[in-house]
Image (cartoon, rainbow, N blue to C red; front, top):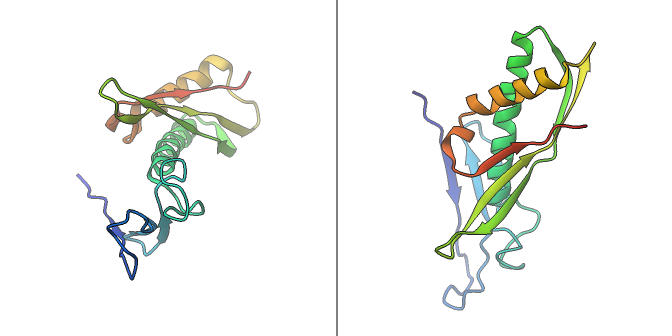
Amino acid sequence: MSEHRATIRWSRGDQVFSDNRYSRAHEWRFDGGLSVPGSPSPHVVPPPMSSPEAVDPEEAFVAALSSCHMLWFLDLARQRGLVVERYEDEAVGFMARKAAGRYWIERVELNPRIDWQGDAPDAAALAALHEEAHARCFIANSVTSEVVTNLPG
């Protein structure tokens, strides 16, 4: 199968490390040359030790699930002769505490809004497309978090 790589870089610079007030801002670098600023969530590590402008791992997790679902959805719609004009998802991940006191992303809600060329599929066909997209998504198949697709209406 294929490999997927990312390089994560952080350096202390001239910051004091032992006082726990060092910046956690870092860089994600991908094989295509894209560099993305990364940071812990400001909900977990307050600024200035985090960078609210950067992508945090929890946001990236939610985005990866949403993106994977969308890519499968688009392909499945195409296979059925449907034409999608626009797809937008305002996905949300919800943190919770496990029994052992550790946090995890317990649930991710996908909230896709889709514009179609011509008639949209009926509610049952749309739900079936989303269900199959979820079943085929590599990321969804790799996690134990609940992933729910909220359909409009």
